[in-house]
Image (tube, rainbow, N blue to C red):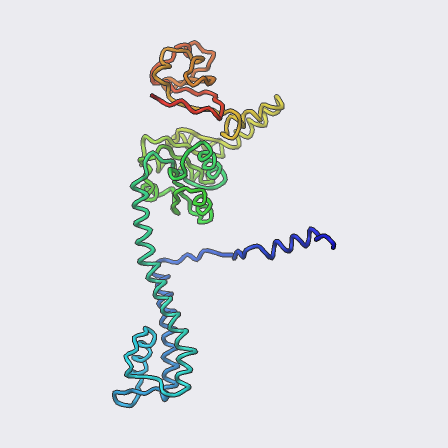
Amino acid sequence: MALPTLRHLHRQAVHERRFIPLRRMIRLPVWGDLGLRLGAALLLISLVILVHWLDRGGLRDSHDGSVSFLDVVYFTMISVTTTGYGDIVPVTDRARLLEALIVTPVRVLVLLIFIGAAYTFVIKRGWEKWRMARIQKELKDHVVVLGYGVSGAEAVAELIARGVAPQSIVVMDTNPGRLALAEEAGCNVIQADGTRDEDQMAVRIDRAKSVLVSAGRDDSSILMVLTARHLAPNVPISVVIRAEDNELLARQAGADNVINPVRFTGLLLAGSARGAHTAEYLADLASVGGMVELVERPILPEEVGKSLTELASNGKGLRVYRGGKPYGFWQPEVRKLHAGDIIVEIQPTDMPEAEPA
């Protein structure tokens, strides 16, 4: 027996693949959606009224024996709503056939339209508001990610790899496809505009542990930073800025950390020119997936008075921040650590981070 060719296997895989439709979001206001549903229901009811009127001879009214137009409308409404008082009934075979083949399917469609409208505008919205209120109540010391593009998605993946619970991450984006990916990762998601006050307030940004901004456009990212800083004056904010000219604007807007991916890529390239393994080590430091990682933490009480080389974590101390000013491991200021210092050190990825006592 001949073995199947690669082309045959590819065709078989394509046929077995699930159907994925091509879609485009239809943006309608609430009243527009509701109007379309009611219009479709009225059109179907009008069709049944026409059918009953044209075949009114097949109907019998037990009240006065004659079927007027008002009787037809009345009979249509009680038929569509499945009430069925029995005062007007189809008596001929043709009338009963029309009821079975035309009126019954229309009745089902009308009921589905009304049930769907009730679910969309009443049940679903009420359920979503209840769920949102529960999630908002639990949001505290969480990470807010504004923008789930390439940088935002990588940041969330790295946070989860570092041990951050997905339930403590809130992703905000206007793209439903991106939010679906974030939801699959276990994060809380909200389809909203990160530049608006009410949308950031909805994710309790004032109670967040940190805010990560990556809107894909520098102007949008800076506006998000400005909004977040206004609502959360004490929350650390990091932002991705692609143009060097906009870095100062981002800091003036309130960003604590400004990351330029173009500059970081340049650093990796320059490092690779100086040695075969320099760029690899820089990438290793930036990711939890490597052998080592950079850790920033406050000084521990037992480390006060000791040198940067005598850390309780047994990590390799690189820098100390004291009063907002950095000091390198070679400088005399790091020979004696002070309370309130912030330490940047290198730790193996399999070693737990030191936590304050």
